[in-house]
Amino acid sequence: MTADDVVASINRWIKLSSLGKTNFSGAEMTKTGDYTVELHLPSPNVNTLSLLADPIPAAAILPKEVVDNASDEGIKDYIGTGPYKVKEWKKNQYLLLEKFKDYSSKGREVKKTPHVDEIKISFVSDESTRISGITTGQFDVALSVSSDNAKQVEGSQNAKVETSPGGFMGLFYNADKGVFKDINARKAVNAALNSKDILDSSYGSSDYYKLSSSIVNKEYPNYYSTAGKEEYNQHDKKKAKEYLKKSGYNGEEIRLMASRDYQDQYNTAVVVQQELKDIGMNVKLEVYDWATFSDKMSDTNQWDIYPVDWNARSTIFQGFWTTKGTSVEKSMDYLNKIKAAPSVKEARGDIDAIQQYVWDELPFTLIGHKVNINAVSNNSKGYEYNLGPIFYNMSLTK
Image (tube, rainbow, N blue to C red; front, top):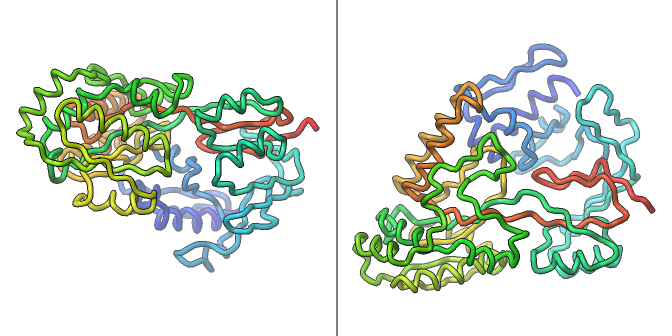
């Protein structure tokens, strides 16, 4: 791997990836030597290293010739620098990786040791099949286990549950048009919600969620903040009705959008619908498949409010302000101040400020954080999860 490979790969990532386009517009990686590079930014970004290290979508380094021969739609040759290489890939079925015998971790702070000869990643969308496979010994790891099935895994003799910080469940408002363009309507909803009831319905047990007013998990202390926490989880119907009256709401139908493809989001919507009806709102629950839901999200003529969860990150660079309106546009000013800070420590005031802004202006209501649940066989060692599964240090006892 040379500087030429890094320059070609990172500049392509900046141009085409969601993280690159959002956070590094106008940036350029340049070569300063055969094995040295510089990243030139049009303005400071304190999250640069975190963004480059993020695995989704990864700033992967590929051979320059692979990048040069690739179209914008995607690469054709999957060549990296890791301990495993692609042996076979059948789309929508499985990805088979084999140990790369010439790999070395020498000189690296993070050791990657390929203990097993092959790793087969099967794409199994049906959770019951994944649970059956992990409990019977067919699989060594099963990802995305629901809280409903966690007890079944724990009760088996072959596997155990592994948890890690999850994303937050949020209720997003159409602040561009309609009822929720008025801040008092958003405050009415926020005052009415009982986060514990909603999360109990979505995740079953408090073992699998956390009541928290912070955008970022407490496990990531650099960006964790309690600013505005007094506005969180109020479940105060009287106050909610007062805000609703101030908003001038007059019984208009409110379209609450949800998808059954993500059961926790659907369960959240069902409870939210009832809690809003209890304060006098006329709420219609509209349920779609995820593809249709995603299409409608981008059109503010199609909905008024919806729940969705965002994956956890250790920073708040993500653009989870997905709706439109003044409340969303103003939040970008706070994000830009954080990015421009010389260090995370010096950004603390702006981190607290954006957290306070979220609770004051309510571009969305944060309901709480879920816990990621994965299942690992008792014969496995070395499995880790850090924003995604890490397999390279895994081994099997038998």
